[in-house]
Length: 179
Image (cartoon, rainbow, N blue to C red; front, side, top):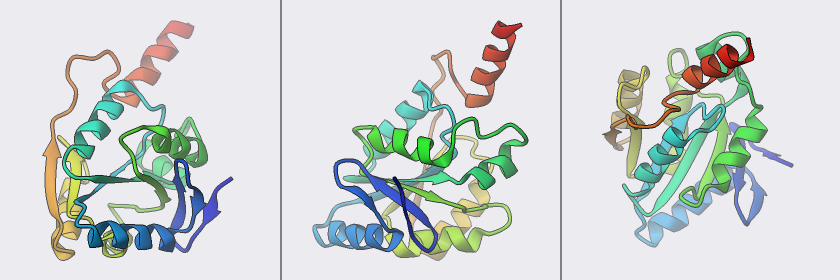
């Protein structure tokens, strides 16, 4: 079960569902404890080892990791018909289950058209660092939003030596195998 807030819903492993505003309160407590909060955004459709390694590296950039998982509509707008393969509820549950993730949030942040929502997410959680993957197609919009909120941006290289380098490539491989 997911709890819906004004911008999305949040799942925290071990604590059950809570609202978006509650995750902002949790982030405030972390800041009061002087924890370095890291924010990551992404689709995370068909979670693969490259994404897990990326999230592990992102978590090493601070003490607490918040992951914003794109909504189904957002993923569809970015990736096209047939995507996402898994629902937002499934994707956020898998991301939240990772040991390196402290909070996983589903939000409809359309970086290309509605960067104001992304700024609102950062304003609510007030992370110290926004971590982005190398060659992020939304890098410019993310830097602009982060700068407006006083958030540092760190780019992390993509995993290069593993079979599943992207969900799109993984899906292509699956489709070729089926025929």
